[in-house]
Amino acid sequence: MLEAHRYRYATKKFDSTKKVSDEDFNTIMEAARLSPSSFGFEPWKFLLINSEKIREELKPFSWGAVNSLNGASHFVIGLIKKNITVDSPLVKHIIEDVWGSTLEEKKRHLHFFQEFQENDFKLLNNPRALFDWSSKQSYLALANMMTTAAFLGIDSCPIEGFNHEKAEQYFSEIGVLDTSEYGISFMVSFGYRDEVQPPKTRQSMSEILEVIS
Image (cartoon, rainbow, N blue to C red; front, side, top):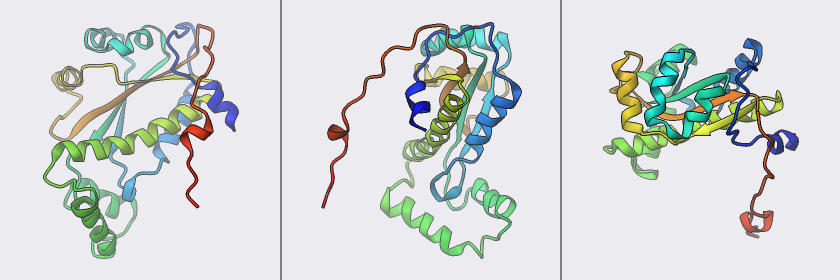
């Protein structure tokens, strides 16, 4: 299992002649779909950018994505729902349509969610805090996508190197992003490396793990 983690790295140069199969990409996306999220509310959505025109137009404000846009087989934008609270349409949808339950049956679950947001993490009445909380959930899906890709021998690159405001404005202007409902959390690319993997360097276990007895 650890071999997949050793294989994965933030690939900077992709072989544009090699394409990830539909079957493998669907497996990567299924890993995202099956990912855990706080209280199980799955506050994410993903955009697969196949358009070469859009890829080209992203480059001026997506400096960290240029290499991926030039050669990666698949390029994905991770979106998150904004302002998720107990009264959100998403919460109602998840409980009723996904879980097949009712708000009344999940009253206790919603009570804990309310307490968590209001008292434990103090997220309410703070759109930025709510955005960041949702974004953290999407990174669970992102990690699972990249690890699954590595198991399949597929390379990836997680990307935060873009101008957030310009990226959201761009996708809003082309009609694929309602910024009142969704925000961009991350970009990520998948494909096959066209470079030698650099040595993987990490802190030692003793530096990152402290045992409290």
